[in-house]
Amino acid sequence: MLEFRPLTEADFALIYPIEQAAHRWPWSKANLLSCFGPRYLNGLLLQSGQPVGFYISDLVAGDSSLMNICVHPDWQGKGLGRALLLDYLERSKGKGAEAWFLEVRASNGPAIALYESAGFAEYCRREDYYGTGNDREDAILMSRLFAFN
Image 1 (tube, rainbow, N blue to C red):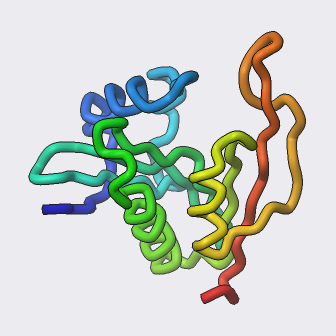
Image 2: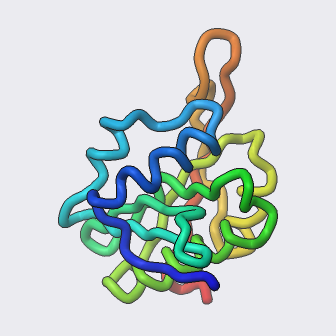
């Protein structure tokens, strides 16, 4: 059974292993821990009581940025990324969001398709934003306005 609930700093030990398992360049402990407080709107996804995914976002003056959305590799490909994205959009809209922003690796075709299906569109690129050394790639910046239903 899927369950969504707000993600708090007390849940750090639940999400850090997911972050480490799911990303080639995962966020550091310090980076994750810096994303809790009044301006943040974070969510945790549980399957039968076990954490399987989360998102980190902020909400300032009607603008919300999705900074991290993550599903454990064992649970990927089951529609949980979409479920997390829809929970994020619904919760942030309920808190007053009118515009949404995110960035995604240019090579992450499935994520780009997911975001486009939810009304996001590319508005610019940051060249060589992700990675290190010769292993670099562009970030695609995407946005969605409240008017999209």
